[in-house]
Image 1: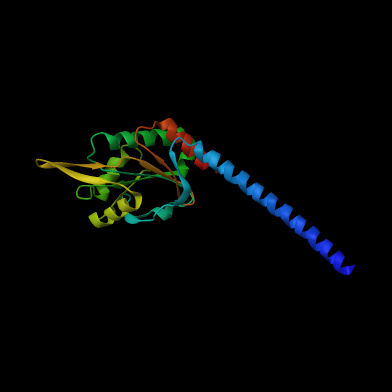
Image 2 (image 1 turned 45 degrees about the vertical axis):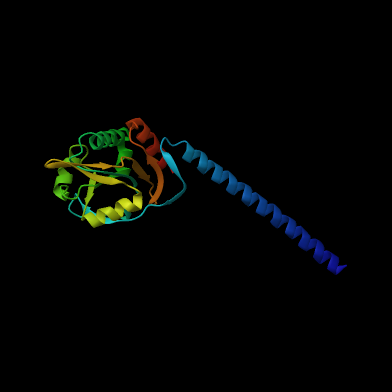
Length: 208
């Protein structure tokens, strides 16, 4: 009889543990589904699963060292371009400036970081002056050709110098990364999206 009682007790505990395990699994599935639904609601393409954004250390246009990890706690909008770009770069920066303004006070929680693909011409001082025409809070990043090539490799950015007589341009990838407060890559916004699209996604990520 005691053996039977012990068995019954063990069976009951096992049943309770089984139900608890099932409940935990169900909750996990709901949380995962909710997170997936939230991610799919973004205008930008999402990283599934999200992954940590590669860190880097460059010379910042503000005169200080630029480390991506220094901006943990803020949303980071990371783009690549150059100050001599005739169309795509200024268009992107204008869109980002407008999107940040649409956020109102919450815009202070968003940091735009723009890394040059043209280290020959883009000094920190030149980038500061250029980016300041769009938004004085924007931070530019420059460095040696080797440093910048390593950052581009980490982020899958293509850049090719094209010489025209005594001048040259740089053809480069034009998408923009959205990195959350924890330093995780959450989304990639292709060129051509509107300030409203950016503001929409940034609001969603800020609400997390």
